[in-house]
Length: 322
Image (cartoon, rainbow, N blue to C red; front, top):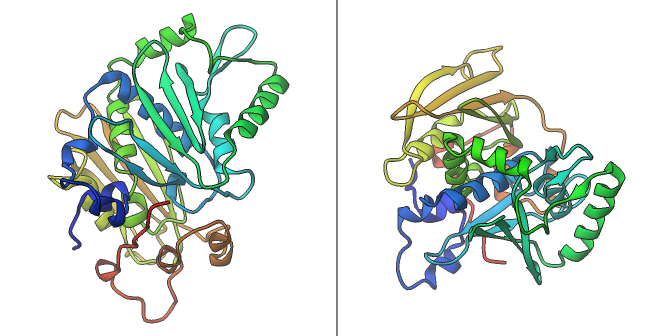
């Protein structure tokens, strides 16, 4: 069993961590402010709604968390089709149709663009999150393309509007006590676990009521590999504050192609279901390499059929700062 740490859970590089004057606290992996949680939850949902493969699970290489500073989410670059940055704008920026119905992420607002950093906020609050694109990201061009899409849909852009629409206000008030908001915020701040402790070639999420489901697709050659991911998410120091409440494991049963592990909060108000399914990847190792995936991650996702090393002995890949 590896040692869990700030690096393994956020994906932050050792290079950057070595320059910090103090060791980051596990407290940085959660944030109590409700408005900041709503913003981070919306960004997590938008990222996990992009149904294409990129260099990392959920299209994020790492998140930078520094006490007193806005979190920085390091976005992947290329995907199967359009760039991750272009697709992200279409899933995170709210628009309204002719009847006022709001699509995508109600309340999200653009606070500015500085180089490859897109600053996002929540309307009428101080919440702030920075989305950092890869080198060469052109947010101005991506925003123009997004506006063309909005115009084609016949919708109205809300991302520059200073105040909430009535529809947005009702939506946010309806989620004011939603336990999934805090859970999705915590998962965004622990985004590194999906790269470091999962061998899934496809990861996305969806939710209903008080349950968030994480769909993970793994190749058939990968042995039962959910134990480390579960351990990372339930670790007493670095985890989500949840424990396993139910489990069906079919990965060691010949002919079975699925596993499901349910994590629950102590109060039972929120649940996280890890749904592992064994099926072939629609991208080859070479195609993943072409969109920037790390060689060591690729070797875990596509292990050779012979001499497969035990999962617990596989090395966690290091990623250096961009």
